[in-house]
Figure 1 (cartoon, rainbow, N blue to C red):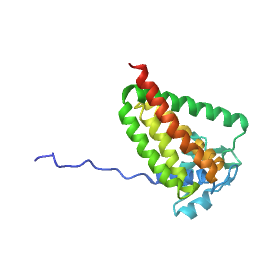
Figure 2 (cartoon, helix red, strand yellow; figure 1 turned 30 degrees about the horizontal axis):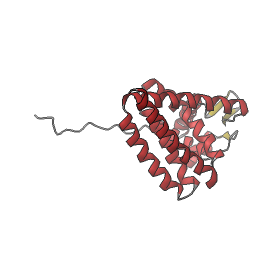
Figure 3 (spheres, rainbow, N blue to C red; figure 1 turned 30 degrees about the vertical axis):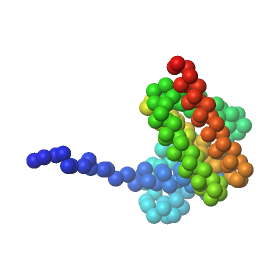
Length: 201
């Protein structure tokens, strides 16, 4: 029996994964406020699932530090102070800059094409307002990191990307603040790529 036309079986996402994604999105979009206490019962009813996947989702989100589980007290959405904001911004800069250098060194043309596509999508989303821009902006940054093809860097970035997105959503809600990242993307992208090409000559 020939197997050339067979397709790989795609495994459906687990219920816990789906619930985790839902709660993560609620936190990122500020539908669940920073510091808010979360109820397994309320969320299970709202999402139409049992309390077990919600409890498991809390455990996953705690690993991303999007929630804090306090024994005997409950589960709370994360909060941050000025020191934590500075530190996560520094970590983000290190990861993204390192990933960009690697992508420039190994696949500059592919990097330029991928980021150009993301940038065009972001510009179109910006025309629809700040809310539409957020998801595209995050995709731009994640594509930059994934272009490194370094699994350790990608996994490290994904562990903190939820908090980064949640913070950025709260800081870039107006049209004026959303326009800034878009212009910064284009300038940084071309400067870094051209600098990387020049260093190899």
